[in-house]
Image 1 (tube, rainbow, N blue to C red):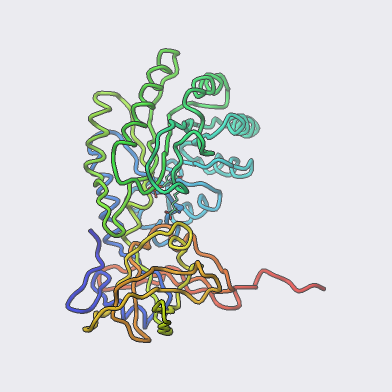
Image 2 (cartoon, rainbow, N blue to C red):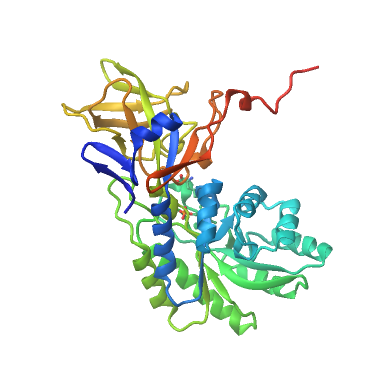
Length: 414
Ligand code: LLP
């Protein structure tokens, strides 16, 4: 459930009509709902109940300081994949000892900064990375806490670009090779082995792949225990899907219940790294219709947001609902909602049944995750504004980029 609902014909973000937000902040504009973000975070936190756990929001889904700061105030942890995300979390007030560092290509400077900040754990994705972390930690005379991200070879049955748990993917350490790497890690003086990590993909709409992966991970934990390597936590990654159109993914409650049934009495802390399930339906993208352009084969509605603002439709063929800010009476027509960028792949939605007029305001739903964070300046388009709605108040949490920002860091040749 989210807080973007119609009252009469008008779409509201919490208690504010989105038309007001568009007038005040312009378009294209990302709008987030504080109540929705908090509700989704609490749904995960409550679902794990009394079992020791930490919910680490995946920063890549939405890294705006407004969003991170409100999650930090709830006591959230954070899953980061770069030093840039680390600095954002720290600037937002996140606690370093609730930060998990994932990602296949951590640089030495990133590792150093993370150790200096005092993060909780590195999710190690390869043996050479383990050696590098050990070297940097030794050089700083620190002990780095690690878990190994294992690749359990489980099919997440999601889009191939966002499935990560198959052995042909670049992620993690083959689960069969992992024991030897654990033995190596346990022998390193500046490494503390704390956990097992796995993340098999994103936008999963069923529980069985998660549970299959968990079975593999628990079996590995048992084998490690026999060798005297005690595992303190399991990090099961993110990946729980959301409803974009007609998907019916499990709720965090059902997910946690199924995990708990498998875990039984085991004394293991559970870490989850949800991104999309917290932020996805907590945001919309507002965009205005610039022109209607019916052609003999297609009705094009050219809007002021484009693939540079919201890449998911162009990149994955993702379908996100597109709805009017004010519902109009009339006979709907199928419209292709396209942006001004010079590519045929620049669309936000195809053949959407809508009643449209030039100047109408539209909302692309489910844009709170992997929306702004994947945006770019392609076609020299300034990136959109971001606004956080809190009841009847709206805060600009990122101002729209100015034209001069586009080339502020560039120089002409002398
Ligand atoms: N943890 C790790 C290690 C990850 O790689 C990811 C996502 C997450 C957690 C969070 O997954 P989530 O709960 O959001 O599914 N750009 C794509 C999604 C890419 C996800 C990459 N990794 C999209 O727009 O659908």
